[in-house]
Length: 311
Image (cartoon, rainbow, N blue to C red; front, side):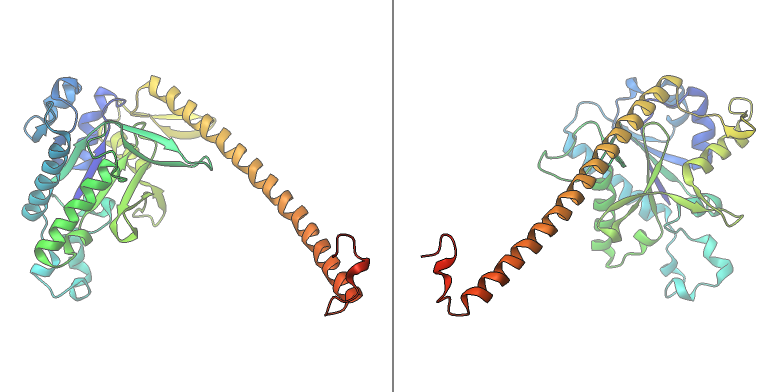
């Protein structure tokens, strides 16, 4: 079972059908009012949409998403422990019949009802210039709550299931993914690593580790080659992007700002290293002065009157 967090703002209208087809979406919960969603998206997801935000209590709406997701997991995830003692006892050829933490394998091996959660996302960067997983633009949680909305939903859902069943099998057979608002990167959630989101790479059938978002682009091309053909630039093949052209400019500006932050960070590190180097020489000099002092004054300090400031 996969859960996807996606911001629909920058996605081309013709991309929705092949995108949702490949991701095998069959359940939708939207934190964006239906009248603000792209019309073509609404027409596709209408039979599968559970709820769309409509000025209700934000925190309660977020909690309702968790409860819906929990029920969806219970209904559609076929647990290994229903058939075997544990994963190790499952024959190798049978493993593909069960969900895993690999979103890529879940798509390839299972015909399950994956979930789509629509929300507005915003990507930022840290003080070193590295991009960080996007957070929801709208604050649905208590301002003092230090988790992002996708983290809150993912963690809360798994915690409820663990508390109810006294095992972590649902965690082991599900994958939570965020696609940033530019469809530039995707991030995989790992509750075991203190709710960490890491850029998602998957090993494809050829044994190569690839960015999952690039795999998605390849599959969109295969499902809709006319709308998303391959393009050749300087002798290299590239997939047609599914984000709108104007959002590419926003992404480029973000990457430039992040690059400037990285340069400033490196300058600060270089400055600190120089200061530490200078400090080392200073400490060495002070140590020598102390040794000279005690050598001249003796352990009792009886001869220290000759030192400036003594007595």
